[in-house]
Figure 1 (spheres, one colour):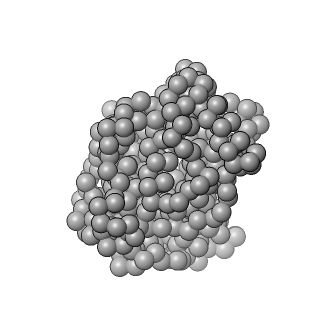
Figure 2 (tube, rainbow, N blue to C red; figure 1 turned 60 degrees about the vertical axis):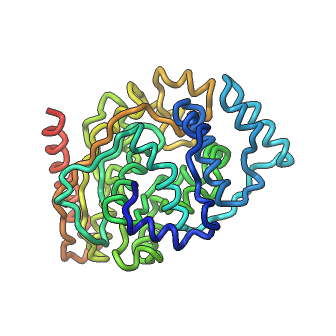
Figure 3 (cartoon, rainbow, N blue to C red; figure 1 turned 135 degrees about the vertical axis):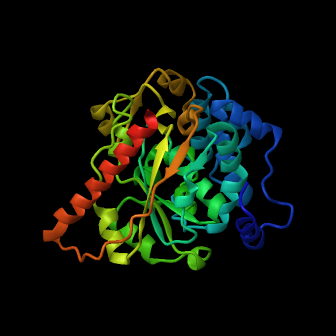
Length: 349
């Protein structure tokens, strides 16, 4: 479980009274075992720490568990809210709740379901700031990111903020599945330059002593879009993390994840349909029949073993990039991609 440093922070900073931390019950273990119940688990934890009058209720949770029941639950909630969507108030990053969520929900899932583990830990620095750059795949809810964030928190007591597609903040499916401010409160940063820069420049209360830790997918949305056929092939890297590494003199910690491609296997991305529903990717696979019957499975993923291989630190380069020198940053980004591709190929053998 989470290390003693993080546990002390959690105990001293959460505002709930002693004994009110979320405890995994038999019903939570049932939800973890039964895929349509994962959405219940996330929402129940949120409601334990937050007042959420617009959220799901117990009769609606019960409907999640039967084929087609989610549609009735959605109708029930829509009628209960007076024919409107859930509130869209913007939440701010709350490191206290992130720690609680990781310890009380993500921890059991990582340990018993994804079996996440860090390899080559000798390459892991003791302190930040860092940009952690990882290959991204799976065409599913970003469990490879959540698992790595938990493992780094466990190993070093870090507060890790992932850079995430804007669709995970504002898409109607996400707004109805999860509390509208869920991603922001857990520390997710929009994959947009202004938000990325703001996250790099603004310290968090817990991260002050250790530095900012940003989790970034250099492939961008091209990573999960590539589908099953190209699951081991790294796509072109964006250059923004190279330029920000230089601007703030923050080193890059490359990480190779093996196993994320099995989170949602045998997938094909239908780009026209994806654009029609305004999602960053739309995986089509044999599992989609189950998702049609149980839409609450949208945050679920197949059981797999997620292994993370920590690579040697890449120090920040002393360049002062301009638009004319974008090619220098691009060259650095692709050189890093080539190094990680070689490592992936070695590990697969």
